[in-house]
Amino acid sequence: MMWRAAILSKVVAVFLPLLLAAGFALAQEVWDEAAAVEVNTELNRPALIEKGRYLAVLGDCRACHTAPGGALYAGGRAMEMPKLGIVYTSNITPDIHTGIGAWKLEEFEQALRHGIGRDGRNLYPAMPYDAYSKITDEDIRALYAYFLFGVAAVHEKPPENKIRRTMSPRWPLKVWNFLFVPDEPFAPDPQQSATWNRGAYLVQGLAHCGECHSPRGIAFQDKAYDETEKGFLGGGPVLDGWQAYNITPDPDNGIGLWTEAQLIQYLTTGHVNRLAQAGGTMAEAIENSFSQWQDEDIAAIVTYLRSIPPVRGRERIPRQRRGNPATDVVIKRGNLIRRDAEPQNLKATSDGARLYLGLCATCHGVDGTGSRDGYYPSLVYNSTVGARSNHNLRQVILEGVHRETAGEVKMMPSFARHLSKTELEKLLEYLRRQFAAHPEQGSVPRDN
Image (cartoon, one colour):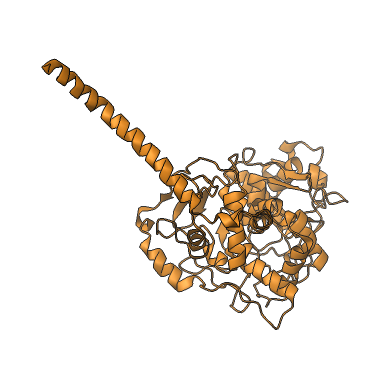
């Protein structure tokens, strides 16, 4: 009998933890299902879900919450934040375990507007909750309905954030939020038209344009959140190598010389012949968001942007009015490279011209004026080439451009693997000297 008791004791010792684990898992599943029932199922209405879907497009939620090659809204995209580290975006699908499937409306609102997670911890401001604080209650409900009932659940946990140890405590974010984050939803200006107010609401809130296009303070906070504050949309910091330009109506430093039609065309296609082409994060925003906006919303933000106070800068020649067609590369065509390599002719500008001729002239033309229809952009009077800083021009060369709107793909290949650091600098020097120069004086804008 004793040996039977011993065997039974061993069996219990082996299987009891397994049974307890299985029981706990079953209980957890029941609890999760009960939590899911607690969400506001009365918001599961087709019209509200569709409205939320469009609001998610307006907010370009896909850009941040979808990793390259990953499932829609499953998170995991790496966001490199200056002075902070790498933040991986969260899963916002209705998965109960790794997403927001068990979140209540109030919890969703707290995260979106105030940057406070369901566990009570402050979120890093990689998520633009300082702009989303202006979203109305009605739109919060629609977004909640869409993400819970209109998106496929994906069971996928994003990687852990890689935050610098000195920046890992989250309690300072409470102070940051108190000092810098607006705490009231958008309030329409009764002195302005409905179109203007719609544009203001979109630019300041859902589209969060200021997150990139407004200057930052010492704590990396937005210095301005609307047109009443100094510097609003006057140009932002360099993020991931790209710089967002001044988009106020200043004629020399902003978009004051752009027509309404040009602004609408740029936002919907990313391209305006002999003026501007979108690359990097702006191309992504146009592809995933702006190109899918309703016409009246595009018109609304154009109305708003053209009305806000202009922010003056250092330039007195607009970036889209700089440059001259090239002539020096024409004489190099058909000549042996070694002829230019002779000691008396060895100049950085000559090397840059050779690089341009070999890498760029096939598409942009020997003289840099591109194709007549604008499919291959002109580098003369080009708002990226003629900008005060060469950050975006450098990124275009290194990363290339890919943009798809209305089923049409525009692309430029990356030259990162084809250019040494020295060659890149020589090519940049040539492009700037030739295509960013003052049209009469020949001076080139100095980098910030």
